[in-house]
Length: 439
Image (cartoon, rainbow, N blue to C red; front, side, top):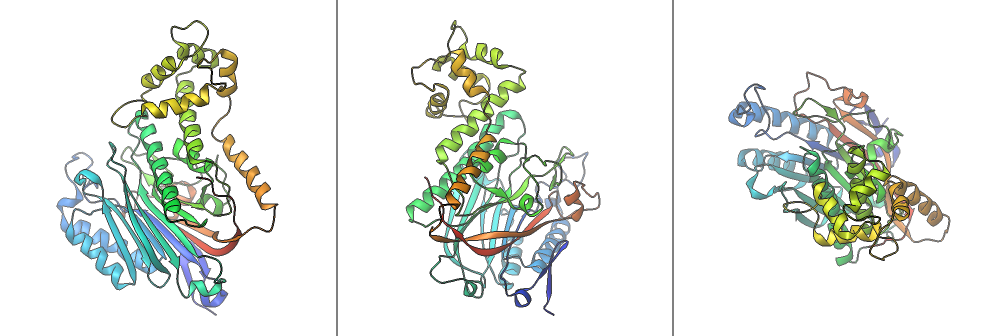
């Protein structure tokens, strides 16, 4: 019998036993000591003030990471501001055969990101850093890799075996006005990935987006990524739908709320992708309609709100004013004037500069989730054509959370490694028909 390697609660046969290579990916927000409160009554009492505490906890985190030996490790809230902790991770991960990169948030926030990959599994082709330069000082890492021996020996050499891995940590939604900021951060990531693929003239390849997305399956970021063809690896592995929002959790926040916010998103090269700009416009417009509905406005009330002082039509001026009132426009992190103009094109469907009530009714009903069904239909049409170029992609084998109680939507009181669960997904490399790539 071959050795059995475990990913949390699942047992996975080793490569030698099954002769089928597996790539595992772990994403984990490790809770920076500068944010970990030791006294809930005294917010200034942080773990960072007590070296034995943060050192012991991070040693235990590393023990777990090195015991599991995931092919890819993506960490958030990595304490880049402490050289001793940085050296600890670099040494222990390096000694275990990992190549790692860390990136601090802008404006010296103290924490940041770390991404590490096993040298025996990957050849590093490129590493890039993305600074959002917004009010959240958030960043992202992009790692372009190629499968190396022994994994690549299982696939024909004429099929490229490259992939892109992104690690990020989006802004926490402290209030509803930050929803547009978070959506914009997700858009910037996809925009950067697309421009990178175009710059280096890459063929379609699998993309993994890992990290703490600070939003649930009900949020606008989730819907935006789904509308662009990405799938939540954990939900696919457990056959959950987009509406299964409370089946699992991965975080207990500072307010005591538990929710699922940590994701490993997969986009395979066989998935149809619509224009990114169109996906973005649809997502922002979906948020716009959501805010109107949340204010208990029906379609008649919403139309009256948008037309303002005009008798029977909405103008761009009235539309822009409504965006401002909903906190979607302006500095430091709102939509630009041009982005507002792009949205107006969606509203003014006939392009005459005016939107009457009948025209408004046509745009009031569709939702961003409808885009998902349209994409699925496009995929089925593409796959039926046959004789397509082959591409390298991934099949999701399984996915687990630790602590295991999180898989049942429960947060254990005795869990102390972080305020986030660790998410690990196992992928199997496969060959796929290559779909259209649209920029």
